[in-house]
Image 1 (spheres, rainbow, N blue to C red):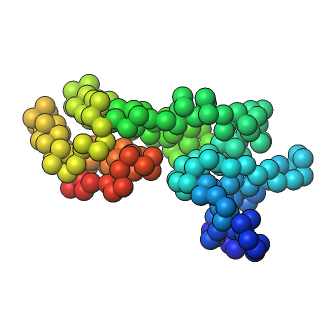
Image 2: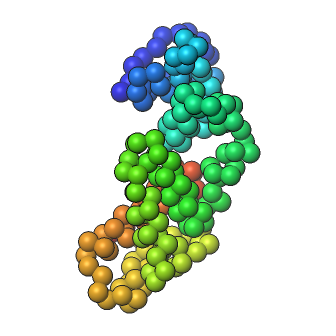
Length: 198
């Protein structure tokens, strides 16, 4: 959901305000490329506004949700934005395994917040880290920029060679989870487009 706020000059809202839910929104100012999160603190009866320090709407949404959780919990909001904390969880180095682990961790946290099924991250981990044909054991430290459609197709052939009994539904799940990892690479800015995964 979006709405517009009106101010003039460098402090004017750049584009629409993205409302995530009641009491939580994102917006940008003309003077900065970074999204700001606006969180309603019911206890203090005021809005808390902090820069998310990212120009990615996907990442800004994640950080905004973490900020909202901090406002309503015991964790200081500033700790959410601490560069050292972000490095631990939010700075994959661009190789396939680091992005896959980032995806799994984010799904785990979303499950705890009730934004997706609590066991989604386990399913994702099952397909990506499978002992026999997991994509993480195949691509390992390959950088996401090196994984294009030909590499994906070669991997899928490798999966079939490892287990010829896999059903089409399982192959679809494998493809879906690889696509999610590649999208994570795009969202972090390592690639600009996600390769086709037919």
